[in-house]
Length: 132
Image (cartoon, rainbow, N blue to C red; front, side):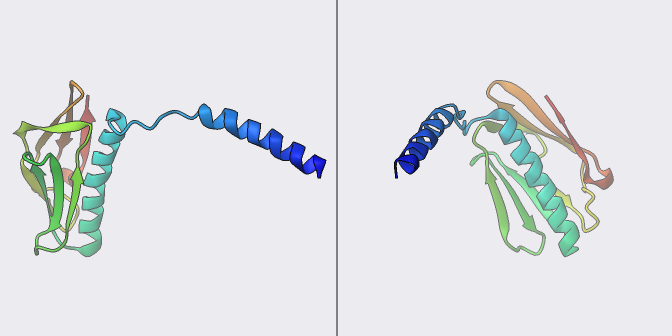
C-alpha cells in the first residue's frame, strides 16, 4: 500500500510540473489563422473535385467571413476570421470549376495584427501562394 501511495505521489508531482510548463493557446495566433484559411481554400477545391460540381468562394467583408457553397445552392461552409480581417481591395469572390481550377485570378488581401498577408490565386489548377 505504501509503494502505491509513493508511486502516485511521484506521478502527481511529475504531472504538476509538466502541466504548468504547457504553452498557452492563443486564439489570435496569426500563423494558425493563415493555415486555417489555406485549409479552407483547399477543402473547397477538394470538395469541388470530389462532387464534380462548381463551388463559389465568397469573401464577406461585413462579417469577416469566408464562405464556400456549391453553385447549385447547396450547403454553405463558413469560416469566421479571428486574428485577421479581410481588406476591401482584392477578390470578392471566385469559383472552383469541376476540375478544381479557378475561374479568376487575383488576390485575397488580409490584415493580420498589422501584417499584410495576401493569398494570390492563379487560374491554372486552382493554385495559390501566400505572400507575407
